Amino acid sequence: MITVRDLTVTLDQTRVLHGVSCQTPPGGWLCLIGPNGAGKSTVLRAAAGLLAYGGTIRLGEADLGSLRGRARARAIAYVPQAPVLPPDMLVADYVLLGRTPHLGYLSRPGRRDRLVAEAALDKLDVSQFTGRRLEQMSGGERQRVVLARALAAEPSVLLLDEPTSMLDIGHQQQVLELVDGLRRSAGLTVVSTLHDLTIAGQYADELVLLNAGRVAAAGSAVAVLTPGLIAEVYGARVEVRKGHDGRPVVAPVRNVQ
Ligand SMILES: Nc1ncnc2c1ncn2[C@@H]1O[C@H](COP(=O)(O)OP(=O)(O)OP(=O)(O)O)[C@@H](O)[C@H]1O
Ligand SMILES: [Mg+2]
Image (cartoon, rainbow, N blue to C red; front, side, top):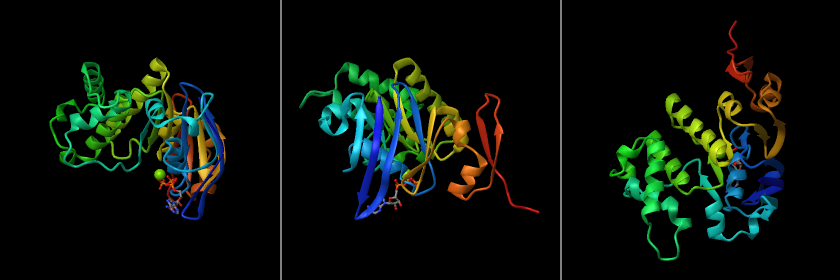
């Protein structure tokens, strides 16, 4: 469904991605991991159509570059790492904006659009805040509202950049299970970044470890989440245990005598 081939991106004369390739089938979940500055957000921004790039990004058979704005916006929803939000906007109005790609020119949201937006608010546990302004929400509540807007767009591909960075552990699980449920029930394809390696390994079927704009390793969680690779790429000391589902649990180890 999404195929990235030889992706290169140059920002302000600095080459940030040096030929990144990765892919995921329809209904798959690909997770980009890697240290700060590795290029994870840049891959997502290129896939969201926000950056000029070299190489190709395909959605099924279609080249992303050939998809027009509205067609692309209907297919792909993107949740940035640090969204800029209009502080005065009401939560309900903001989530309804997710329906914009589905509206005709100059037409207003209809009954179905409102129902879809309400359902998204409900699923993300923020329906009690619909009458609040965005600036009146906590960091995690606001992050869930941004996710609700993305789901309200009913995309076939969801690009999530650190979608749980501000969420407590309960809401983290709730959000990730929700996304996982949508890919199983509706064939949603997910490309995300996640800093928590254990969680990345629990949800994604393919991990792509980026380092300095290149793919350092790719494959299943068991193949990628090894103490050796993590030491090499992150400079971190960890031990990797086997979780109850057989997936790796990555635990930091302190260097104490
Ligand atoms: N406009 C720019 N000009 C030059 N370099 C840039 C520009 N924007 C971003 N970069 C650099 O591109 C590299 C990749 O950034 P990116 O945001 O993709 O990293 P990331 O893997 O998402 O990191 P993080 O884990 O911190 O979110 C970084 O080294 C960053 O400093
Ligand atoms: Mg980032």
